[in-house]
Length: 92
Image (cartoon, rainbow, N blue to C red):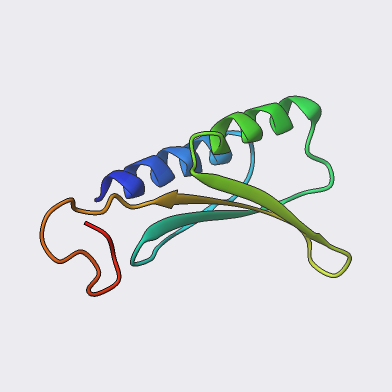
């Protein structure tokens, strides 16, 4: 598992401990963690959740009247510093 995958997995474990059901997904350049947030989440659990996603490179909350709240976090994968990284147009 990549370093980003390890960080995302650690975030997912902490979200699970706070009572959420996280989903982890690997992508080419990053790993994502998403979880539905119930309306009944306590203030203490919110603190745990926010502390967990603070380890991500980016995180946010999508709230809609149709689907409720979805918490998301993104952990970027490291890019190699040598060789042809991403083809033309990418700085080395």
